[in-house]
Length: 462
Image 1: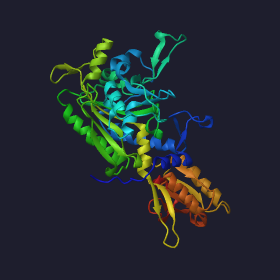
Image 2: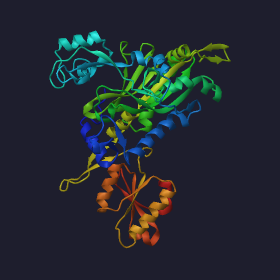
Image 3: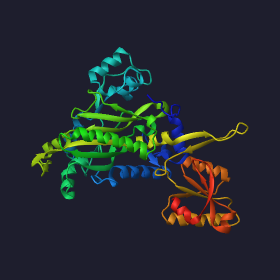
Image 4: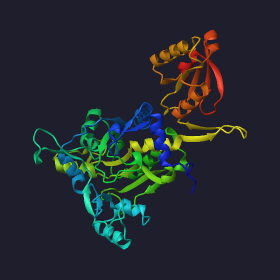
């Protein structure tokens, strides 16, 4: 087995870096924050959009067998009954008998080192393990027996709050796709196999929220639902496993040593799933954690929604003259986990000094498709017309639609280092020669080498 490249990186380092640089802020921070909710800042927002665009390019825009939708957050409550979320979308909860704080039982068991994937345990098995190992709460107190806790976020729509107005925020983003799949197939005149993609909000009333953005109550899911003829699902399942792996390696620049596959055990796999695998990423000292799942959902979703809605969601195959509910290969990833993995993957510290004069620089070596800013315009000095010339270049590039930053505060060396941390690919130094011949100094992030280019060449760099 290969060794991950980020063995010693700590979560706190990434959390502090994200806050200091303006990638991520705790939501409602001036009020003390609000548990497990986060805002993307001036650097985090463009990085987020670039990750999403790379996902769209890989999974939708460069393919001829994919379409994309955007579904509503509120959906008919009956949907969650049909999907199994009301009856089975739950975690096991235990309570501190003294403080009455509540915890996820599987997390306590896993963190005690007793077993992995404790979420597959029944309430009886969970209680037995807690008793046998004399597990206590975080505060050292006895724990209650476990009980199921539904994760759907419940609310009311309309002027009256009673059982007739109950609604739920989406527990998973993909349900819109299953409901609309036949309408999409008919309106786009698609033949199987074809897929539907969506980046959409999901909400879960998590019992335990921790590890920064890894587990939150509000998040976005990036879903591909690929509809295939029954009997062909194994071939397409293997295809999407490899295709999804390629996205992380080729589009997000993840070192394969930091990725691995894990197949779901039979007792943890959803009862309707034929097969399920997770891609796990090595989050430094946090260890291996799931960031994406590839699932063979069979025809469960179209079967269930046909049954509960009374509508025919089948596909008519004109070639074979057959009518059937398609099987679904799902690729689903939580965006926050991908964002966090991207930060872990590309955050680096490098010794760039000498023995006599040691110097450590921090750099976010994001690939070109992800970098929040491709260019940063830096006047060598504010005076002597250099600041005015730099501002002129900056405004020209922004109007041309290029992602670029501007910085004139501090020494040029310090500004180079700030932009290294931002992940900016090239710093453009406007110096005295720029006033004479219109050329600028380019300082490259990864090599720290310098070269000269004309103003016109900058548009090509962007």
